[in-house]
Length: 162
Length: 161
Image 1 (tube, each protein chain N blue to C red):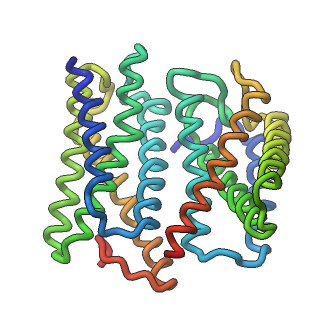
Image 2 (tube, rainbow over the protein chains, first blue to last red; image 1 turned 90 degrees about the horizontal axis):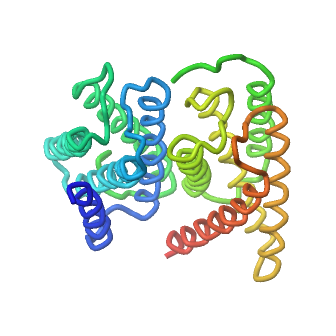
């Protein structure tokens, strides 16, 4: 039951994403989703397979929950963050939205630690927060580069980079 | 990001292939806007990344990429290598204006070519099969190639609007 809540939240997030009216163009959304997938799965491979700082319990239901977190929840949260940030022009609000996203992503990870899906070894919440922030900044900077390319092609979609 | 255990023939193969593939990529006449080109390359690399993440590191440990099950610098370069293959795929699909049966033949030929390239990569230890077989890869390519073409088609339709 307690594990299914993660699945239910994921389904609700997916529905939310598809029903909200998007202000970002389709190519920006596609770029952000693909980039988020690439960065997040790479980050998790480094902290789990390479360094074993975060260990995922071997039972299949825990592995599935971990995969849902890194391949659906986190990229979708980044995507929603950029989408909501594109609706405001205030840099202060954009920053608040960005920080909220990092906290929410960490909140999910913290919940998975509570559920014993993840076990930390020589790792703590601050390192996770630094990791999540770094991922966010990598996606943000690559998105700025992509925006620069699309601007040269005449696209002026309003978002984080404006 | 860790460095490879040994700098040997698989690393040299990846570096050589990167030079050849990106050399071809930049020599081809520009056909699509840069934004579309970036998305196609990113789509191909991310699809490969997700596949490897699911099949080689999680529940199923069916193969290793490069020296170990770990994610090293050259794993990342392998994904950079995949990107232009997706670009070449849609480039010639669009250039030759393929439709219906010609698309099926094109997908089949590219899947055969991709499998042969993978077999060549395996001989250089870029991939180490641990329960995986080349015939599985061929089936995988028969799914991944049309998926890339559909992605390109849908994106272009959306961008034209």
